[in-house]
Length: 113
Image 1 (cartoon, rainbow, N blue to C red):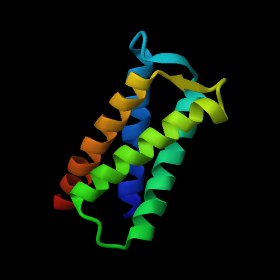
Image 2 (tube, helix red, strand yellow):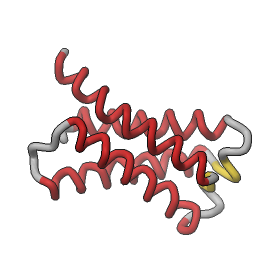
Image 3 (tube, one colour):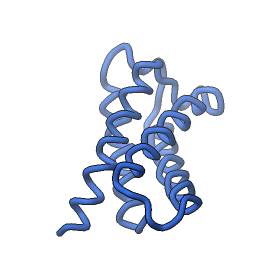
Image 4 (cartoon, rainbow, N blue to C red):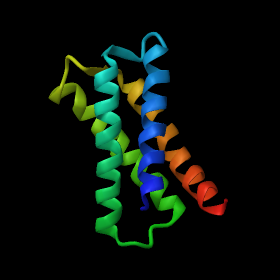
């Protein structure tokens, strides 16, 4: 993953978490700091996982990694930092699916340009 991929994953995760934060019923508690902290962890952990899997990660695998990493980070964040971020299970799933789908599409489109 390149720096553009890391920045893209961070921005996507932060924007999606911010949008989900605005939808009633999906977020039990959250702050801007919690959203940004989760987005940083998602981007860094995704980079680490892709590095462990080798340099040739396909777009589909990148989406799967994005989904799993996002789901795990957001789900565990409510136990690690409950005052900063608590999403419902549906909110967590929605975020993870959207980040996973965008991880398939965006980095490839950025590379193509």
